[in-house]
Length: 529
Ligand SMILES: Cc1cc2nc3c(=O)[nH]c(=O)nc-3n(C[C@H](O)[C@H](O)[C@H](O)COP(=O)(O)OP(=O)(O)OC[C@H]3O[C@@H](n4cnc5c(N)ncnc54)[C@H](O)[C@@H]3O)c2cc1C
Image (cartoon, rainbow, N blue to C red; front, side):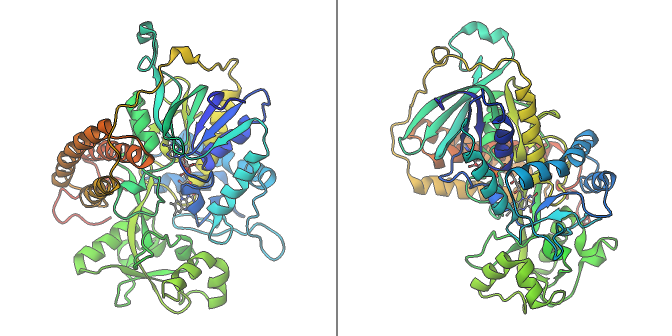
């Protein structure tokens, strides 16, 4: 098998890319290449998911799940997409995750699946594996992929650019045809060169972009590469302004960015001011501490600004016994303990942080983008499911469902032929200078600060205009740096990060309506919810 000339190229090996690959591999005639920039295929946002994945709980129904997703999405969810998720998701959890990959979700003492509850869910319906659900899922999926003879996984391989015609075609007459994707130029990290991966169909599954913010729950590598590549190639991008901030992220030295799962509030955890006063009920009498993420994050932000608090507290020890805390949240317990916080006796200091991109590359109900032969699935895509604010534990499910749908759409295609290498030019490396890591780190920090302060939880025309001015200037500087410097993964990520930051800032400036997790306070004194 030649991974460089393949039927299907999948860029990204998180839950979305992996589930697409598993379905595609059932057709033994087709060859599938998966690339990932990480050294291990398990690395990506999926690995860090704690709370779990939605299935259908007891006393639950598809209609109830749809209602909850629509309510959290603040009027911007695409109802038909939400219905697909609720109809197909729970069955795929059983078929792909439990039966095929063998994920051992937690069970009750009588062997039934144990359901957790999370914010803004009207029923307990979240399957979990302790509080390290994502890790269990991705390990099982990658192990299943490795058992397929027609799947080839390439690690330490960073996509630089999608190969699209007419842009990369040798034949000038392709300009009269629709934009079509034929694979990607990919930087081979060990060999320091760029190779052409040519494919009949390409699936973009590169995940999120939280790393462009100063405070985030996302791991290194979540820097919006796929969004930037698709945008440059001419794909339609929508809802980019809807960046979800997770309300409860640990804030202590060496523990920054560590998520304290929403399931903690689902199990009775309460938010308190540093002097011990509960406050959520004042803002959202119906849901209180279980209000949707956007509301809780903004209320915390408001409390911090209003009273000058460095953080707020999350108290779980008043609601659960030490034994139950250790059994239900072993990862959170151990991590906090290692940092000097015993959560069975003390509240946890938390702040909001950038968590999830609700918008992304527009796709239809089959994961098709506006570029021919290019699909987008998972966090990089915008199917319309999450609207203006994602409901907890639905994004793993969306990756599973749309990964599967894109694969089914591709499977149904009669022919799938990769273009000949003669039709596509080799990558021309222009830069001669060695990359200076200090410059890359500094530039990345500047982007992160700009995004955090001016395109963060609370936005205004003035801040967004400042962000655009700074980011436009920075993009030019980075572009020159990029043209003159030898490629590496961090440099590719830096260029993508500044481009994605601009996409978000422009969308946020353009949209004057506060909705879900895009919140404008152009009116002085606006209430936080
Ligand atoms: C801390 C945390 C907790 C979360 N908890 C939950 C939860 O409980 N429930 C839930 O539903 N969701 C949760 N989420 C969100 C969820 O984990 C993600 O939205 C989801 O896993 C995204 O899956 P994905 O397959 O789209 O992307 P990812 O899992 O991020 O995979 C992206 C892949 O693309 C690769 N990649 C990126 N750029 C390139 C490039 N240029 N070239 C090659 N490869 C590239 C990466 O290496 C990786 O393999 C959580 C997220 C975080 C960060």
